[in-house]
Length: 158
Image (cartoon, rainbow, N blue to C red):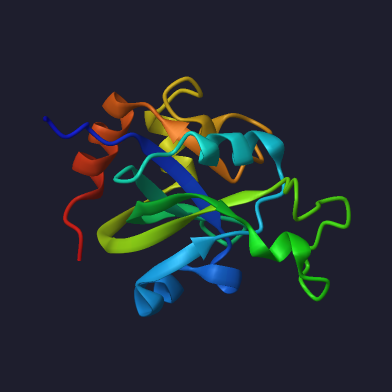
């Protein structure tokens, strides 16, 4: 049976909260704490083997900095039940959890970054949602043709 070509995603994280260096050190992480229904639904449509561009957001130069792979899907987000977590959701119940997460594996960092300003020059909002004015989603799909173009532009993985 032929292996399915991966889907591509862009997943944002603030580098001072959890950056590509953190993922590299840990190698594998739970992508938890997502509290937006549309972003959650995108995560629910991920498959094992899908790849995601790691995007540093809310920093001096927001940029695509690395790539990671989905290795486990449809995990119940444990932070929704943790009263000490900033992601605690008092309305979520163990018998009917609201929030999911995925497990991601570090693949690598790109030898060059593409910042938001450059992305806006290259792509339309239909090509890459992150360039859409007012877009605040932390997870979004990337069309395969855009993903392939990004991979060429970003260069080697180090």
